[in-house]
Length: 526
Image 1 (cartoon, helix red, strand yellow):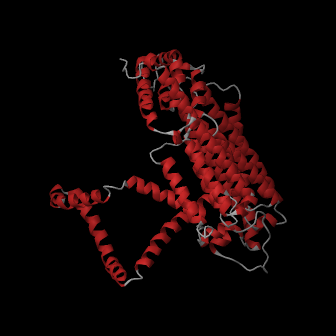
Image 2 (cartoon, one colour):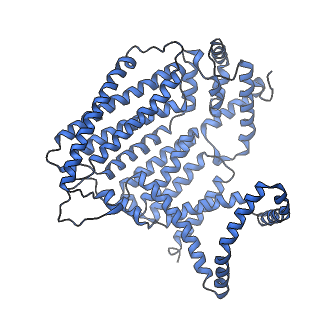
Image 3 (cartoon, helix red, strand yellow):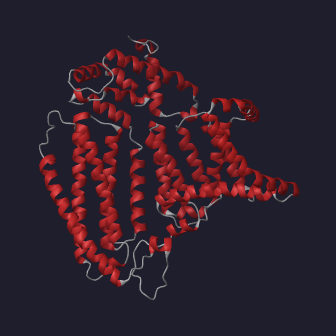
């Protein structure tokens, strides 16, 4: 009897834990606790998943990011922990999904399916009685007119105050009815609980049955030659894993590819030679030169160029062209283009490094470095795809695994502290964005207080320049804003309980409360 209701009991237990450690709390140790219990529940309810390598990969990422949230509570660690949990859930389903990217897509498709099924089952249940069928009949007749009338009512009310006054009583009564309905029930809590129930239901019970998504899970890591004797498939399924191209079309595709790759290789060679000459060795920032525009605009153009290169190669090597006997020329041209794109990636890296060396660290500059690392992985995997005749499915799997693994590892780094320390020790003090210090998390507040002298020098050096962009003009203003941030943090922090614990904020809170008398957090410095 107990075994029959084991899933329901497990789901109820997880819902209670979810409500207790997340409602009115902030991200902290609660993330790691809940995801660990969820992983254990999945392993118990589906013992076969403990033999799946991809499931253990997701579990490792969940554990890494859970530690990251507990230590630093960074935006990256929180986001990656959430997505790692979704991947872990989908990898536990009885399907052959192996790509994290497809897993995320499958999860949200499953969530849509779950919500839709809930409403459809509710309608089916209501329609079993005569009174229910009568209600549904009149509801279907009235719903469309009422919705359209409501839209026009809002439009006309917004256009005319006189018209709106006619319906003030209606809106007041409607508001009172809604308020009375939620008088004893918190609407945000209800949404919060429904989200948790949907997540747990998808984890323990539901798998999506959407045909197009199932096609994404089909196919092989290796490409195979399609002969005339093989039954043709069409539409979405063909595009995903079984492209069939006639021989005449293959020859045209080959010639088109060779012409295109010769042209773009020449263009890229000219650009690389120019960029290496100007920016690789002994680069100096010209006087009155906007390094920000130089890096930002050029970086985006070059990143789009590299991504477009990967898409073009994927197009030419997605089908039987891989098995064309005379494809050696296009393969060599592709390898040359991959090498040249690697040089281009190095150019973007150097531009970003020039920016960091001149203006210090920031989130987006670190993000560019991470993105470039993933582009390099993409280029290497593109080479292996062409050389070893791998499929697009394999390429997506390898790159999404690399992305999840890299970002999960990076969630174990306290980036706010690294940014603050690097910028405080930066040699080019006049170019540091002092305003940015106040956008960092509470974990760096003690470090900022300990280095107010350095920050004062940076403010003075910056405002001694003819070109300025920082709003803060004095150290008194900076300290006043820092006091406001720190005071707000020390006031709010005690309101949370143990599920919200994270090491970085706990350490900062203890330091700030210990030094509160010396810091005079409640004082506004003029």
